Length: 116
Image (cartoon, rainbow, N blue to C red; front, side):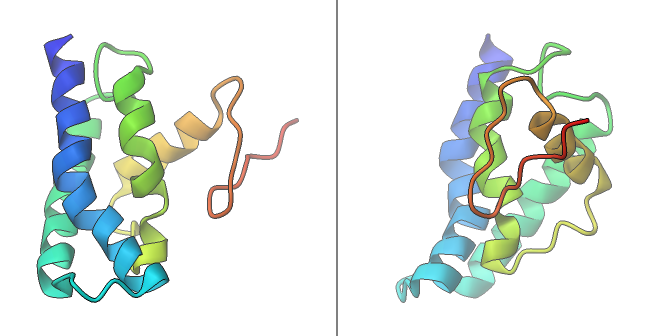
């Protein structure tokens, strides 16, 4: 449980100060955001996340948890903040795994996968 809580904290910290803030800046013209700092924080958390996911398919416990659900939206929407996910293959694969979970519902910017 402590490992899951760590990711919940990461969502409220690094993800919020990185990809989420970049999205606020670019989509909603938030003027009180230091874009250089936001880009640095985004690169940091995406690198950490990518390295972590190189070791397994899910953030913790070997299966999807609330940690994956909490981290997912702002990472999956990083392009809205002009943060490229291209350098982060493990993050991209994780996003696709989440989108293929039973019951996944897409939203603007996060399309549902084609169901066969």
